[in-house]
Image (tube, rainbow, N blue to C red):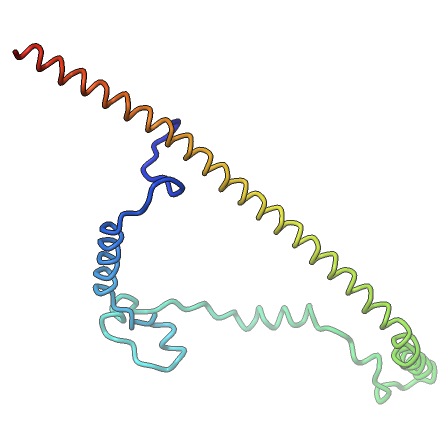
Length: 190
């Protein structure tokens, strides 16, 4: 045996007395705990009262800092999204600008009415193929890991069976040596 082996689940049988003692210890530990206590932040979210004993543990609670309004305004400036002004006809003064806007709008309409219906099925099929590939990859990883777990369990079982043989051999040696010592003590004592 290479390591310390306390209990071999594939070889040893659990003792009923020990199982009862363990269950009793678990019950005693659970009786000492107040299972009705909710974290103060959860109760604040629910709008309930916080018991004073628990409130004393978290006097200020844990709150996230609020973002600075200047930072938020700066982010909104940087990420303004789509510039809708290019599509507004009311701000357009020149004829050339109106023609450009009309061209933009015509292009968008053509894409939505002609191109999108023709390519949507292909986009759907492409996405389905992609999702199938992802699912297959995940299933392959899952099968590999399940195989590794099975191999690990078989390895543990094999090691424990070997340990059982070695423990039986050591116990036999111990018993033989004990008998020799007792016989030697009896012979020397008489």
